[in-house]
Image 1 (cartoon, one colour):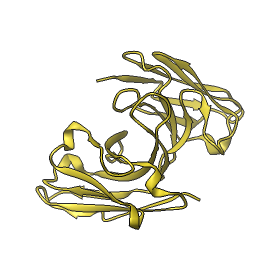
Image 2 (cartoon, helix red, strand yellow):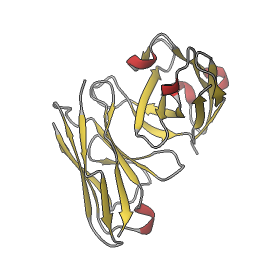
Image 3 (tube, chains in turn orange, yellow):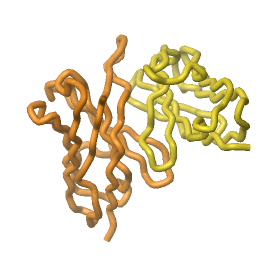
Image 4 (tube, chains in turn brown, yellow):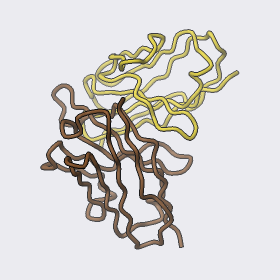
Length: 123
Length: 106
C-alpha cells in the first residue's frame, strides 16, 4: 500500500523558514517523480514543485522560485521542501504527492497524496 | 498560462442521480487532464487521468471524456460517499487546477 506521511508544518513568522518532510513507503520511491501541492484554507489546489527521480530536474511555481527548494533522499525514501522567506500567502496545507508521467507531456499527474501538513505564516 | 474554467461551482443532487461536471481549457491540452475527489479534511484522491482512464480501484460509475479544450466528469447513480468537492487539473503545460465543484446532497 502506497503511504505518504508529511511532517514539519507549524506556525512561523513572516520571513521565517520551515522544512517539510514526506516519508514514503509501499512503492519504489526512487522510480517516481515526486511533488508538493498546497491548499490555502478554504481555497483550491495549487501545485508548488516537482522533482525527478534522481533529483536532476526540479520545477517550481513562479510564486515560490528562489524561496523554496525541493529535494529528496532516495536512500531514506524521503521528500523535502525547504521553505525560506515565508509570507502570509504561503499559509496552506502542504501535500506530498507521488507523480506519474504518461504520454508525451513532461509534466506528471499526481496519483497518490499524503494527508498534508499545515503551515501557518503569521506574526 | 493555461486557464481552466470548471462548472458548476456547486451542485445539489440526490443519491441515484447522474451528474456531470465540466472543465474547459483556454487552449488545447490534448488529453492531459485529471480529475480528483476531495472530502473535507482529507487529501485529494485521483479518479481519472488522461481524460478518460479510470484510476485503479475507482468505481466504474465515474467516467471521464473529452479532448482538446472540453472535458466532462460524469458520475452515474450517485452514492452517499460521492458527495465531495471535485477538481480537474491540466498537466499539458505546467499545471492548472479548476476552481472546484462542491457536490452536495439535495
